[in-house]
Length: 443
Image 1: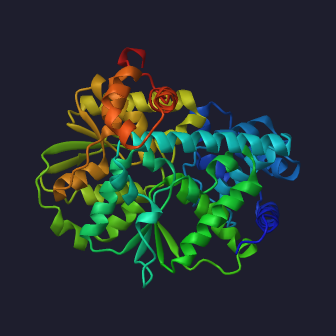
Image 2: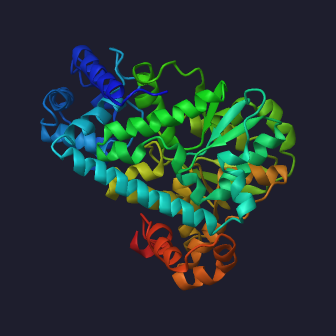
């Protein structure tokens, strides 16, 4: 069982102390980071910026304004990860700087902010998933649908929370694992959270409580591998929770975490013979990631599909996912608009996103452009003869809450949803969640 969160918080403090002792404020991490340019932050003196981050860590969030801006704007690019010769993870360092910058907010207020964000996400997941799937299909994405096996599963498929808003993607992943004859258990949804919303609010105690409960559930299966779908969950577990696990758990977790696309690329020998259906499409990826392991994995798999051509739009990379650019919103919108235009100029038939959160943004733009917008798993499924209808995109393209409710009446009835709550969630979480305006004349 997990101990109290004191162990986790002390471990974070100890890791911060290690950063303060090791960092020389050389500024190399600042120099390689593309975020300041997108955010309009003056980093002409990178050593001074790095020194300012150390001040933030020492002084409960107080430090150079430009350093505070850099920490707040971090969109997780990962360009810094190989820049430090002193063994520091600069991305984690900036995460801890943001934690320090929240210290002036009363603990109760941080806790309430995390709770409210979590409750909003939970409601959105519950309602939107049930607007798209009958109960029996939705059950496939629930941990309860995979009873404890007599032997440890080959792996866990970890959906994270928000993948369930676009459940067709999750079902495609499960179908591919089934074709590969992989034994697995499914974990995800709000009951198996990484603590993302609490972390963002600065409520580290509850972020740790949620994260380590999920880690314990993983460990109980005795699996050796957890496949992450969500990049945010993967980053938080990999850089915040798991490195502190010895301070919080009675035993060190024995599993590795791998992104789903990377796993598929490592099993192409088994997967490629199943991808036999020609997919006559010219495909560009909507991909902003600087850390390219997932991107390369997606390209490797798609390149094995008969008749499918993958092209590179040559768009600058700056984040770990499209949604992460919301920390630098104007630059993020500009990059997305450039991507949409470049795809049309390149004559693609298809713009493929990688992550579920990106799909929620991208899908609304399909009606304004000359190509379809899909998730890359749909292309893999097409090549294998597997199809799940993207009802999320169908509903979002309607852009009319009344039309959406009429179209969803069967699922509202089957899942015993409250129509008024459905209306509220559709307005807030389906139609209201739009980063870049759909009308291309506004770009």
